[in-house]
Image (cartoon, rainbow, N blue to C red; front, side, top):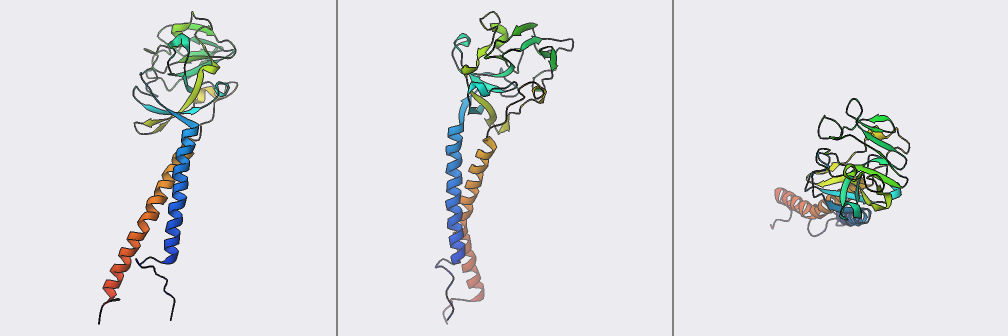
Length: 247
């Protein structure tokens, strides 16, 4: 007599083992992704539209926890400085220590050390600043502007402060990688800063974190659904062939 290779609910033993394995692996990926994300990222709700259209008021962003020394030009960062109200703020870094930041050139563009910088992330096609300015950024400091240049309260309004409107690198706690809600969108590194000394920063592992959570959820649901589906199909097959019917 042959061996019975079917469980009581109609699932093959191999299928039962594989579905259990899928659920186990899925739990590891799902929970591991959440833990990884909690370690790497801090959520932050943006209170104003000073970074619009990159980040709008009310958006919830994922900001990677970093050291201020890791900041590069073009990064959108979360920082806190007493001269700015001592509250967490989100702005874009356009200058680092040793830079001379000015606006505007003949075409209305921001300049860094005399070189014009294209800023495709700005809301309007007008000048990069509604008021002309020039500032030398001290070493260890960052010059920050909002993408909504018409209303952003940024380094331009602090030009008379010590540091010419810049903030210390140590004031930065995180770098924005993505908008988590409304529907997710990555915050890209501007190519216009890539050719400058130091280049641009690399994105954090937000895509890997999201992929781990998504893959885990698929495996958990797929593994859990296998049993009921296989059992139903097995019972339907026996009913069609008359297997198990009483004589």
